[in-house]
Image (tube, rainbow, N blue to C red):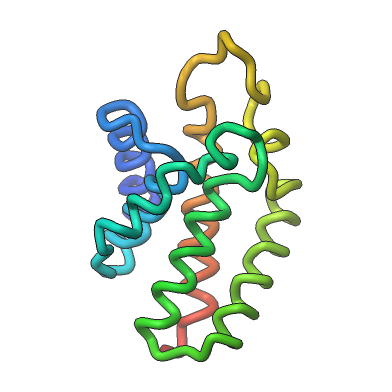
Length: 143
């Protein structure tokens, strides 16, 4: 296992089990560390309900956090809004092909039940964050 994946796995575990962060916040924090992008605390505040729209089961927080990061990183690199929108669309399409859905209720193991243990998406989160990291590396390799 390479060092990026080890870091991702360690941080996912830490952010889920020690801090009880959701998937969107976890995604943003890990990507910001790996990609060396400082996050304004308000960005994390904005992501607190982005885990399937507050457990409603809508768009997955792994997707939402990734889309937010694409925008933040794209602007930092001077990309146009149109280019960032195109990258977001491309990411969503590729994520859906890779994982089968963009919806939390479809991606989350066991869906949403009262007796679910916490952080059922830990392994999915590890894979998804590696996926967005690889996507960003390919998309912005010339930057």
